[in-house]
Image (cartoon, rainbow, N blue to C red; front, side, top):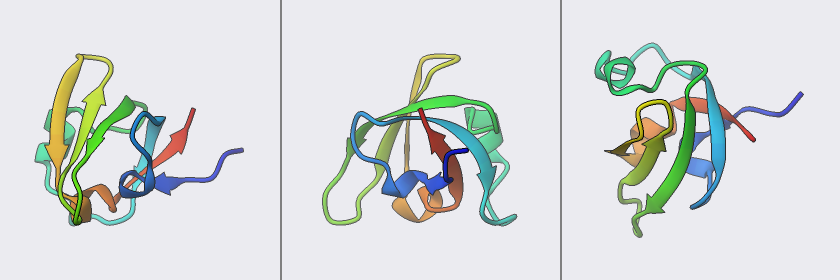
Length: 79
């Protein structure tokens, strides 16, 4: 079984499956955007200096930029 890693720790080009959330304070908008358990994502870009992270959500081929602090709350398994 692979370890869970938060999205902010993934590298550009990494592919992962969202597993769970580290906190209940994550806004509901993330579910609406496609950050649901079981969703496959690819990290497309990481801005320097703790900037946002751009993630491709595979099931609807959308690109979403999220703050690093929010990405730290989303746990995934690398594939």
